[in-house]
Amino acid sequence: MKITWLGHSAAIVEGKKRILIDPFLDENPSARIKKDDVKADLILVTHGHGDHLGDASYISRKLKIPVVAIYELAEYLSSKGVESIGMNFSGTFDFEGIKITMVPALHSAGISEDGFQHSGGLPCGYVIRDEKSVYHAGDTGIFGDMELIGKLYAPDISMLPIGGFFTMGVDEAVLAAKMLRTKYVIPIHYNTWEPIKADPENLKKKLSGISEVIALKPGETASF
Ligand code: NI
Ligand code: MN
Image 1: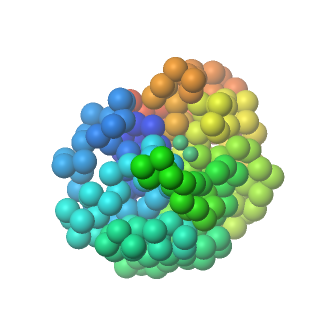
Image 2 (image 1 turned 90 degrees about the horizontal axis):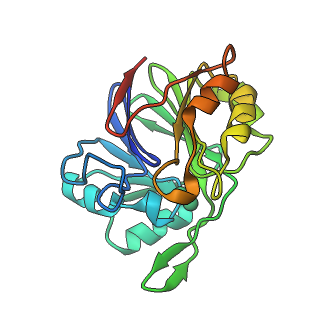
């Protein structure tokens, strides 16, 4: 199984299929791969903030692939003519044998459009169970039910935000990795802009002997 970090929260999880998560690419200062270069079979969006919804509508239309999101965000996308699949917490979508489960995230989720705010439902994370179990936390503060995510879905690999300010920082991500009992951590949502500066080496030190930290460069792929 392969995971490519595209920068910020954007990633491609590739097993039997290519699953693109939070494709914020063209406006993303750290992304090397742009919206016209990306190939995918399905898109998952964690919430309606611009740095996550990003280029999802464009890529969905161009590649004729659906967007999975929480119900209210999926309804919003449908109203714009984007093919979408709306689900909710603890629900699992079976995508040709790959199990995709929606899990909670502790964050906000409004959609900004021309200075107007739409309700985007609630923010979420996803667990993708293919050859390995992969947790993408989305934007989140730390919450105790990460313990449940660990118990239920036993993530081998967890993509956790470490940038702080809008999400967990390094110290919270350390405790999150322990609650999840995850073998690997791929840090996300950091160093895109000044307020979310973080050093993945710090995370590596603090998780030494607990979880292996794989700090990818934007566009880089890790194989598991
Ligand atoms: Ni956000
Ligand atoms: Mn964000």
